[in-house]
Image 1 (tube, one colour):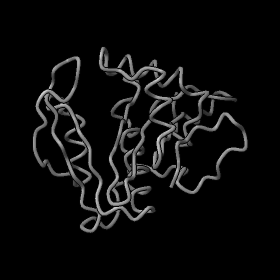
Image 2: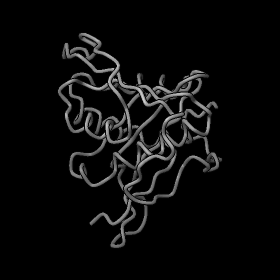
Image 3: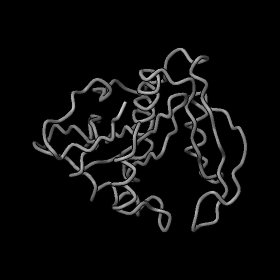
Image 4: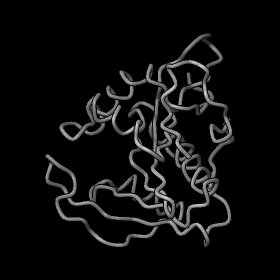
Length: 188
């Protein structure tokens, strides 16, 4: 039983689980190992994972969610967010989004941008709950599925505080790991 979720920086040791979730969530459009490694190596990237804190088990727990963004000096772009279907609608996505927005504030971004499939109603609803607004449609954005995407924006000057479902340990101020296994992509 999951009682609480803890967020921490994404490490290279998490790649297999993140890619497993990618395939489960995004099918043919899922990132590959090389795509994930290249993404994390890019400047201005910041990635976190969610893992359950379980009262009935000790030790490492499987990653149940992940998210990342890119800061270009003006705005942040949410590159990905994914939650294990077994724990969706339990606040994990909201906790990940809180962390992304908090990181965006910390780097002094003016706004947060994202793309979302036009048929992903639960995600669109969550983004709207956070104050994102639809800017337009990007035709055939998701490949190879040939699906359109909404481009959405959250103006950070208009939002006082992110909407948190539950308090979690924030990875925003977490120190970088001392091991070479650390692959947060945090270049800011």
